[in-house]
Image 1 (cartoon, protein in one colour):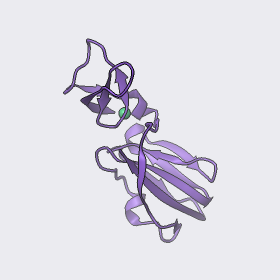
Image 2: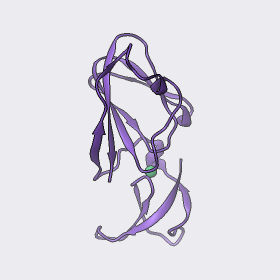
Image 3: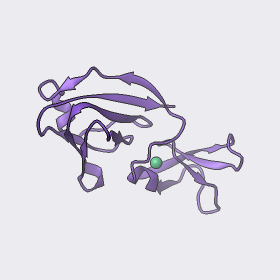
Length: 135
Ligand SMILES: [Zn+2]
C-alpha cells in the first residue's frame, strides 16, 4: 500500500524516515520526506512498534456485529486496529490485499492497517471486539 513519508525520526540511533502508517524505513538517498512509497510492512499487516490503544468496542456476537463491519470499510489515517476473538471464529477479509482471507479465532487476532479496506464474513457463532491504536 502506498504511504507518505512524513517525518525524519531522530529518536532512533540511526535516523530513519517515518511513514504516515507509523512504519519506519532506513534513510537512503532514494527517499525523502514528501515521497509516496509502497510500504511492504503494511502489506504484511506488520503491527508497528510503539502504538497505544485508545478505544475498544463492546463485545459483539454474530447477531450484534455492526452491519458496517460486514461491508468493505477502513480505519482513518494513522489508526491501526486489532480484531480480538473471545469465542468462535470469523473470516477476516482484506479487500485491499487481493481479498486475503484469514480465519480468526481465540489464538489469532486480526491486524487492520490504516485506510486499508477490509470486512468480516460471519460464518457461525462468534464473540469479538476491536481495539483501536495510534501514536
Ligand atoms: Zn506501513
